[in-house]
Image 1: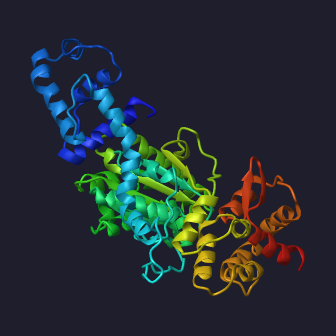
Image 2: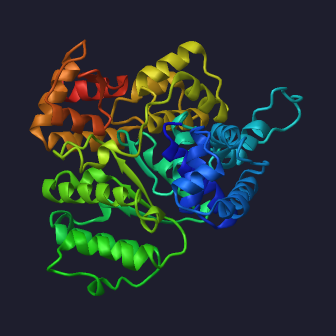
Image 3: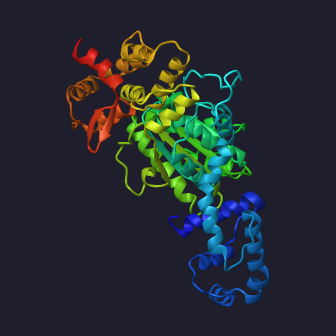
Length: 465
């Protein structure tokens, strides 16, 4: 709990979810004084804010505590408000996780019992899933990203929420994003997913076309006609027209919160002028959620694979506000759990060999475990063939090779990293690009190759060829 503002947003969200009423200004004043233990009486508050004392004592106060009691399921009074909210806040992350993963916990309990059954009794296990893109919502092979997941679930229930998820490709960003959107839908929010890889280059390189594409895409997903011409004004310009469209045509007309997820935002980085204007626009919209009740209906999720290296004014950048999430590779325990879900019992040595190969990358790990569970190959066969064009990662590795070979500066930098036995420094923007592909990892300001698979494959093709 970082500030009273967060507590107030949390309280307002609780009340609205249960009663469909938002807290009014006077109720917020009373809560602030109670939270900060100011010792002010209703008479003091009435005098300070020019209200009748009886109006607060007999009307506003009792209704406020009634609303909070209904929202929290506990008897709330002026004296115990602080302790009740403390309990509610501490339970929020755990409760969100329980709600989202109750089915998966059931699968795990049913399929991996503590006491083994009789040998002749058949056990049911989940069908194996070949990992391709994001992990399905109901998948028993999804591994919770602790503590990031619970933080995201607690954040998305707040009016005006802003979540920024960053990690290399195929690290699980989309799988987490879809689960956040699903939770938002369950609580009644409208959602829209804007995927920038779907935009043509001609759209991404022109601000006017880009913002019109953004608005039309949003309208289509909300199942309403675009009506762009009614709100677009050449004199006001594209950014003000887009903002007016979002405010007057979208937010004013929907009767719920709206979550807009922006996936692969890094696609626009190659178009610096458009990227700069759009990112500052996102910050402007988020700032409006702090002062405008209508804009508090807007929640944003921004997903990107690389650092945003477009120079931005610190007061206009969306990169220093909201909840920042940076996903890491799976740790050893998470890989053990995932192996168990694949009905695999790896020895400590085998586990170490697998981790050295794939570095804990979720996609690489899941693909290895899938093929081992399918008995398509042994672990020794996997280790031997993985960094070759005949292995299970051939398409993945060849795609990376094509991408870096089309940029000489990436090839040169990656060769330096491959040749070094210690982390080294490379040019910053090149480092961001290689990191977004998952090929390198940061060790402070220095970098090294991210896993044994990439060391063997790219070392053979870029150094030994």
